[in-house]
Image (cartoon, rainbow, N blue to C red; front, side, top):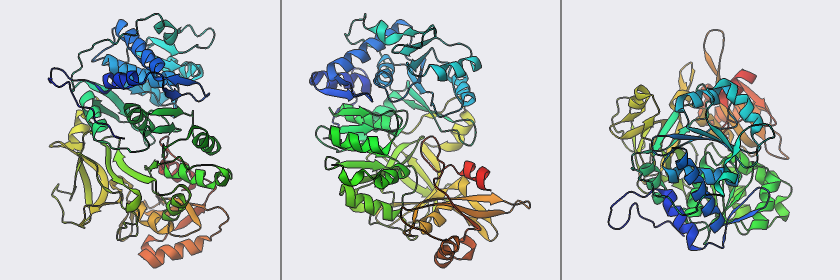
Length: 519
C-alpha cells in the first residue's frame, strides 16, 4: 500500500500540510487501532485524531502558529507522537530536544530556537529540572500527569475540554515545519530547517510497502528516522507500536505478539537482534520489511538476516540535510562495488544525484568525488547560519560531504565522509575502505576505523573490532587481511578488540569517543 494523496485540494486553492491529511486518514476508519503505547494501551484512530486536534487547538489558543516554535522533550510516547502532529497541524515549528544530548547542548538549542512552549513527557521531570536552570524560563507544560510539586500544567488534561472539530490554519508551503538538529557529538549541533512543503513532498515520494495495512514497530527515537516511518505508516492507514527504547528481547516479543510488518533499525541493532537467544523460537513470519541504514553493515550479517527474516531487507542512504536519497531492495544486495562493498542503491523518486570534483565539476562514471544531491525533503538551510548554508547549498544542490561514485547502471557506492579521511604518510585513507575489508572476515561482527595522531601530528590507522558470537580472531590476522587486500599502508597500526563499540545518539560509531578512549 502506498501513499497517493496530493499536495493541495483539486481546485488548488490552498496548501494542505500532511497533518491535515492525516486527520482524514484517521477519520476514515475510526474504530481501528492507530497506536499501541509501550505499556500496551491500544489507542483507536478516533481517539488519536481527537487528541491531535484538541492539542492543536490548545497550541493555537496560546498563540502558537506559523513562525512560532514548539519544543518537545519527549520520547516514544503517544502524547509525544500526538504533539508532533498537533504542532504541524497548528502550523508551528517543531523542535525535538534529544534526551541523549547533555544539558548544555539542549540549552544551546533552546536559546537558538526560542520556543513559545516546551512540552515534556510526564516521565521526564528530572530532565526538565536539569535543563531549566540553563535557559530563560519558557512556557512549559507536561503531556500527562507531571511530578508532584513541578508546578506545570498537564496540557493533555486541559485539551479534554476542547472541541475536537479540526481548526483551519493557513500554512504556506515555505513555512518551517521543523528544525532538526544533528547529534552534536563533535561540537554544537547543527540546526537544519525543513519547510512544510519540503516534508510533505518527501512523504509523497517515499514508497514503503510493508503490509496492507502496515504495522510499524517504533523502537528507536521518533525524533529521527522512526518518526518518518511512523508518519508514513499512519498516512497509509496502518498502526504504530511504540517502545521506549531498543531492547532485542522486547522487540522480538512485539514482532510476534503484534504481527509487526515493518521496523527501522541501524545495523548494530539488527546484529543484536540476530544474536538474541530468543530469536530461533520467535515467530517473525509477519515481517515484510526491515529498513536499515546509518552505518556500515557486514555482508555476512546481512546474509544471516536474510536467512532468518527472508527477502525483506531495504537499505536507506541519506542525511539530516536531505532525508532519503537512495534505496537498496532485497534483490539488490548482491550489487557490489570495486572494494566489495554493497551499493547504497539508486535514487529514490524525485531525487537527483551527481558526483563532483573539488571544483564542483561532474566527474565521469566510476570516478569518485563528493556526492551532491537534490531531494524532495532537502533542507531550506541551517537555522541562523547563512554562511554555513551558502557553503553546503549551491544552486539548489546540497553538498553531502560524502565521497562516492556512480557505476554505469546508476548505482551509488559510498567511500566515506570527506572529513573522516585519515591522513597517513603516502596519502589519505578513508575509514570505510578498511572497514569494508575487516567486515569480510567471518569473525568480525562490527568494526570502526579511526585515525590517531602521534606527537609529530602524524595520523595512524586504528581499528575497533567486535567479534561475532562463538568466533575468535587475532590482531595480527586482521592486519594481514587488510595488507593482503589493500596494501601495508592501510593495515591498522593498532587493533582494539572490544565487547561493544560506542555509538552516537543516532546509532553511528562514535569515532571521537573511540579516539579519546583508545588513542
